[in-house]
Length: 466
Image 1 (tube, rainbow, N blue to C red):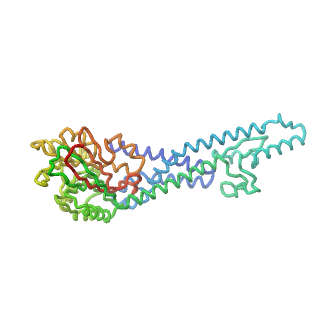
Image 2 (image 1 turned 90 degrees about the vertical axis):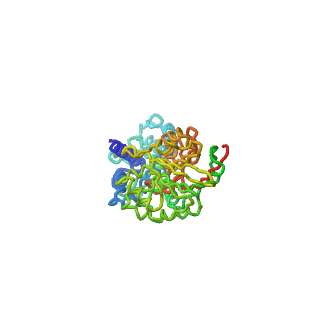
Image 3 (image 1 turned 30 degrees about the vertical axis):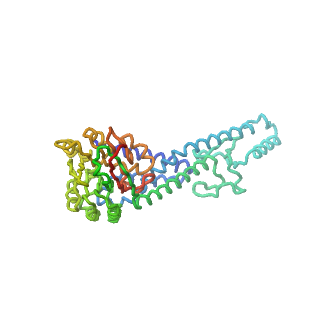
């Protein structure tokens, strides 16, 4: 039922967003006719493509949809954002336009009081005054040819299109399927709508282009020092290479993992921590893409905990747990190990992701952090979601390493994440437990990152007082 509800919510949101895009990009910028019909059907097709991509791209047969589908999702999102932002200047421009029209209406009386039409001379003078007050294109009324995107008013039994100019002076349209007469110029209201559409389109495409380049480029190396008051001084300087949300999938290729391995190895870390969301598919589909992970190098080994996406795969996380063992990476499934360094010992624990609760494979903090654990030792916990620190704090965990948020991946999603997670990215604190959240080295869905570049973290723990 939860999945059905989620799918229904997605379809509803996609429908509403595409209707808004149609209203602003098609209806408001075109006159009735062939162009409007074609653009409408194009947008309908893209609206259908969006949910189909989200579902089918997870299957091998639907991988061909990944690039066009996810690219459109990103463009759709930023078109929506830019158009919403432009509603304010657009509204101001329309208010100015209405004010101008009202002023023009007062300057040139629409009735005959100022220009009595008792004879042909008066009517001629009235017409001359109207034309002098404002250049217009005057055409005979044709109700079937009016558009909601135009500003029209009737004066003396003719339709006046403000600001259209005289077609003979070059101000009118040149003719075409939507304007067969070639006599109607672009109204001011239509000009405002088209200007907003062009600005939103340029902004969306530019933002997505920048985001694609960022997402597919090298991750940023973030060097972070964390002071742990209970840390044995002999453990000061212990270094963790932290990476999460690699999201091996149909858009990444083998080079994605090779690059991450190469960058981690260059850090010469003591411990490598992979904190979930490694894959978006089965071992059969993505096993070769994970192969380069066998080359990870560190003094005390590489460790892995599940993320929510491991539970979304068709065969569940267990096959990937076994696959990683074969690649020399140790999974920490609700368990802990001892890291001996400089004559002292640090507890390194890992818990499963909250996504495993439905299948009975969720986090077990008691098993990982309870029992005969020596509470005098400092403990570092690997947990995919930052919110898991709420439970970790009750067990006296000094530091939790997490991912999951992608740092928002695409601004302004970073403003929404705090509704679910206590830390969006970087170092924070939850009930006395320090939490470091990495932005992740990959991407999910659109291959786009805006305001949240991919990250690999070199984290060094130190003894001292914060």
